[in-house]
Length: 430
Image 1 (cartoon, rainbow, N blue to C red):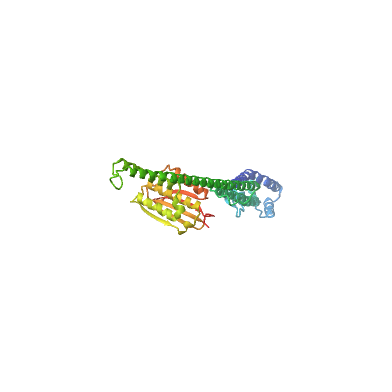
Image 2: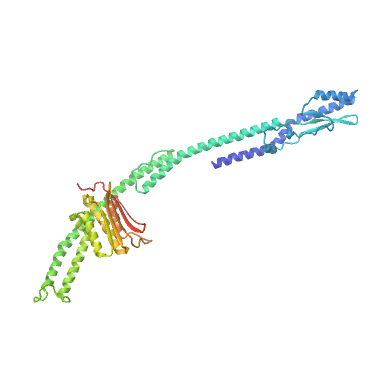
């Protein structure tokens, strides 16, 4: 609207300049005939007085016949001053407008003589108020029509622009939803044809992205399932192969001890060293097996498995205060979601123990409506400025994405929080 307002103001300024230039000449042209008439009247009166037998009587008769006209009048000497034509009958016209017109002085004075004596003047003083009022009315009409046109143009621009901007805003909101991963809500087809075409193309893009996203999640699920199967197979091999071998090593180490002494081998003896190494290897084998395939989840259920994980955390960090809030419905989840939830909690607890140097740690696993909410928080040293997901968190993020969930690592109110949301959908065990 600013350019339109500038155009109207410019037009008014140009109109005022035109009035200022043209008006004086118009005033002169319009009153030229009357000015010549006043001069003719004065010449005729002087001629009549020159041949009259009684000039004063002739002059009085002429003055009576001329009447009280304010345009052409006989004025005896010293009776009243001549008034400017611009000062007569201005009415309610603003003074600035009259000054803008630069009204010229069109009045004239023609002396009347009887012999050598100056007996008065024929004064021509035109009344320009009708002309000024006419120009003022035209100026007001121009201003009013321009203002009305500007208002109509502004309203038209407002509604036209609004009709175009609303679809653009809807298109922008739709693209923002697509950027955030929401490909379901369609963008309304509205506005001019070009915008409707863009909205239709964006909706087609959303359909394609939704299909690709679903294909990607299906692929991630298959990858996660294959990884879990490989882990279980490797854990089974380690358990079946390493377990008997380690048991045999321990039995043989015990048999190598002094047969005269009963009980375990003496410390410092070769048999004791072999037995200690076998026990350490068994502990390492258990940790590897637990990392590959947490048997607790399948055997004990998710809630008991998390409790066991937290007991181990307390034993590894006696000074750490651990709290938990576990939903009773966790054991109703299917194997895939239970494994993923356990892995997320396991990774969060492991990171807190290794890196946080925390004094308190909290674990929450809640079934809230149609999703499971997982949070692992600690009051440790916080997150480094250049934090990047390591192998563990990257693997957890891929697992969670495969189940249409979200995984976040944030710092809030002095707490480092691993926050995970996974929709239940069809992950409740039947």
